[in-house]
Amino acid sequence: MRFHRLTTRVLIGLNTAILILLPLAIQAQTKVKPGMNFFSLQQDVEIGRRSAMEVERQMPISNDPRLNAHVNRVGKRLARNSSMPGLPWRFKVINSPQINAFALPGGFVYVNRGLIQATRSEDELAAVLAHEISHVTLRHGTNQLSKAMLAQMPLSVLGGILGDGGLASTLARLGISFGVNSVFLKFSRTAETQADVAGVQLMRRSGYNPQAMISFFRTLQSRHGSSHFEFFSDHPSTGSRIERISREIGYFRSRR
Image 1 (cartoon, rainbow, N blue to C red):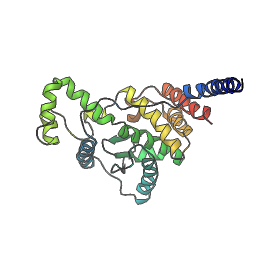
Image 2 (cartoon, one colour; image 1 turned 90 degrees about the vertical axis):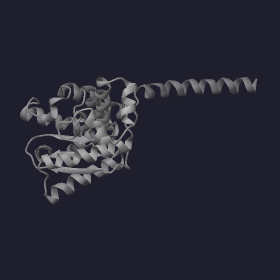
Image 3 (cartoon, rainbow, N blue to C red; image 1 turned 120 degrees about the vertical axis):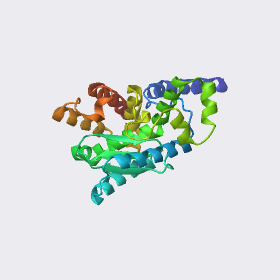
Image 4 (cartoon, rainbow, N blue to C red; image 1 turned 180 degrees about the vertical axis):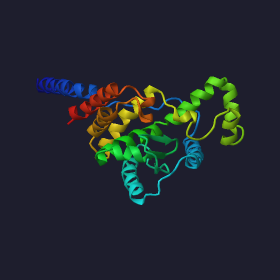
């Protein structure tokens, strides 16, 4: 009888635990997974390094020590808490009034002076950098490149080309260039949404307020509208982004 009563209590306890934990499991933060990729992480870094050299030939890099130090401090704090802290992370400011930021494969992140000036707090700058860092850690650049290459030729042929010769010559043979207009800087809307979601998760892990991503988008939208900025050109609508980010932040709160 004692054994029967004990077993009943254990089962009741387990059922209660399941009922308590199930809603939390349902409300857990979104798991964002990288897509298909034909490249190694080492190749991401090589592509990023070559592209960074081209970008810095084409665009004016700021020499303002205070501005660069500020961006590097925030960026490296986020990078330390990312899923790839060992990448050779570099954060640079482009001396342009346009509101824009972008990231190259392998950890090379650029943010325009105009965007930094549009932020109202360190948390808002962290929101932008976390979004760009997430593009890197989700390997969106070489994922996009992989899709573009697959569209040009069968996988069997592609495998032979990738395994033959240096990376630069391979990409050149496929007509893919480095620089600011490269295919690996043109992300899908799905990739942009993933970077928003992973970005707010990274902000939270790094001790920044994820709500700042929403406040930054609202500030830009109210001041200027979203249609005039390169930063918004390939992204989902600001309203849908805010809605999705708010939902992710709600998952954080449900786990407290």
